[in-house]
Length: 266
Image (cartoon, rainbow, N blue to C red; front, side):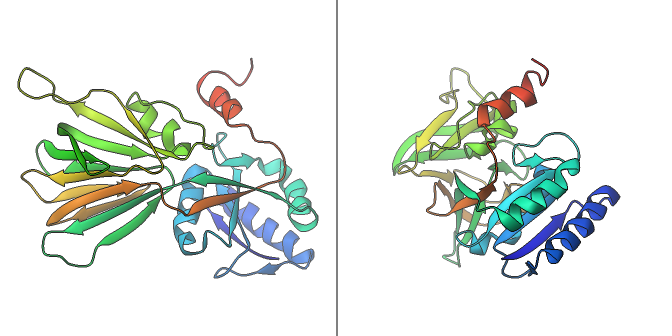
């Protein structure tokens, strides 16, 4: 089996990375940064997001597993003191693959240039470069509303516990292929109306944003912040690609939600 390791870059994570690499090589596994079968992420959820984007072109061939060196993560479930146990599991145990849905972001431009395509594991947000964001929102090709506000956040089920939750969105189990649209400070008065609630769309529905006046936008895709100019439309949907996690033991989603937001001692 071929493996790669990504590190947060701090001293603790780098020490663990070198130790883990040595252990796995001792078990006759092959270190291959270009075409790994399994990627070990050491750090936190942000480190795993980085690893996901690095290997997003081979999601059907690469599985991910995370070691968290700080707080318990939603993607990183192993602790530094379990590193020997994880090494033996990777080297000796067939692992279960758990797949989570993603979001596809396609940005098209006014002058019919080459469109831009991204995959997000957590969320994508759209904001105006300056002033209020004004977007016509279409669902399945039908006009739904004209949004005015600070921005829109489109999240995956596994990303529903991140920025989406802070915006009042619902937490969705990752076994449900869906995307969620949450508003950022929408303007609602006698003249301007938005639905005012998060929307949860099934995998066969697309959400399209079309600019009303300004055409330059700040778009985030997970941890990446991108400036796009002369935008004609931004399309969101659930793609066929999924992220694959290597599971060597149960890691229940609702327990992670409980431990992260309620208590880890109850």
